[in-house]
Image (cartoon, rainbow, N blue to C red; front, side):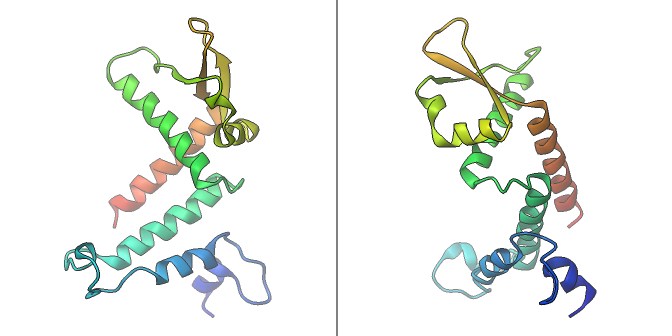
Length: 159
């Protein structure tokens, strides 16, 4: 086993240095090879499967580094929803992001509760509407998401 293999997955005598590696390898193995006949999306000669696999592996590994809590994809997607909402509301010229409001019953959903338990979001009652709760990313979650996406953007840019 090369030193590169050891860094990615560890050897039989070592603990895995990076979580998800076996799962990632299995998922990459499912990516169809060129010439796969069942779908037009996979019959494109301009699609570089090796680069796509590298991006996917890097995404999963860096996600595990920035979020070692192993958050479920639904929770991560929810954090992205809030982050995109903040970005878009700032782009229209607001001094601060528009609030991300949900109904009080929605604030009890498992993914929102999980994000709250992990300290990624803060929930406050809406002062203008008692039926709503306002959800914001914590500074820590925002910083971790920014660092993660900054890394991924720079990684993809050099491919």
